[in-house]
Image (cartoon, helix red, strand yellow):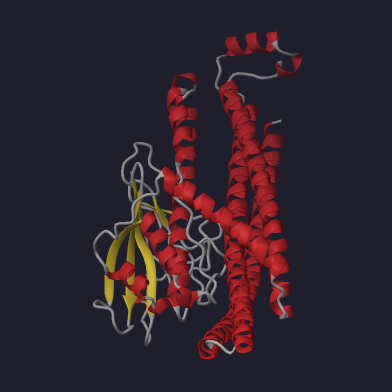
Length: 475
């Protein structure tokens, strides 16, 4: 199992890039806090993750994007009516992840100003569903529910690695296991960060932060009885999603929005979501190609390392059977060894580049794909409210023409009008905020990704230059 220990700062604007590798014996590990993988989803001061620790407890340097230690959350003074939420610890078990949610607040109504509760993913889904079902929040963008923890791919790779242990050297096995464990930890930390940013979006919102369900989630120290979704529930969710899509198409075709702002926003978000989906797919393919290149470098490095330490007789036999190009290879050749180190460095560099692209670009694209869905859902709810308002107007006209139940129809029409106008005013403010947040997030992510790729390119150039000088000295 894995233990994730958090020392979070005052902001979630930074993204965790590269976790330290897990210790090879599979024991419990402590690593640094995952900062949220979104570029500035909330406003605030900037903080970077603290240094990670390896399995023995000694400090290791975080990856290139981390440049300063984080400020412990407990050291940050809270102002009046403040609500600070973080995931301080997370425990990964076979079938579930347990998140320790740490809350510090000066809001009235909380029994404790500093509190910890343990929550599972299903309880996050429960909180999201309760907020989404609340009619009073129809005019707000509901923060997207964090994705379900999925470590199956990493576990399958580790299992296959264990089965193929006899077909590789001890060094190859140790290196590949370390990389797979690091990949597992990266997935784990991103999962924790996605759940934390969901809570922080709620805690920073002027309306959601005083929601009673959020208060129960943060204070109640028992299980919320949110069970994992069974097959029928998943099928029901699929049917519900299909119904929402059908409802969206029907409303778009039958209800004419008289407000150009909302009509343009709906059209934009529909196209924007498609572009995000396509960009996320392309980013995933690009990241996978970098990983494939890194894997190829690793194979070449392993072959060169074995070649540089092979006995003379074996080398000569190998050379005679392959090609004349290997005739100059000698026992323990330093040229081959330097080339092996160079290829190994390039493999590690490709892995870091792929990790940075996935975290800085891929995660941002995937998150705002879900967030744009939430913004679009707000517009569909408003169209539904507009349809109800138009129905109330027609019912009022009928009541007046028949001179029957006029007062009830007027009351219903007034309520529908008030609800629609309130939702429109609130929705416009939310959509403008979403636009500003989205632009700032992508700007920050792209700038940070560019800086990291420039740094990787300079590092690669310097290492190639030094390797060339070393080869010239040997020659």
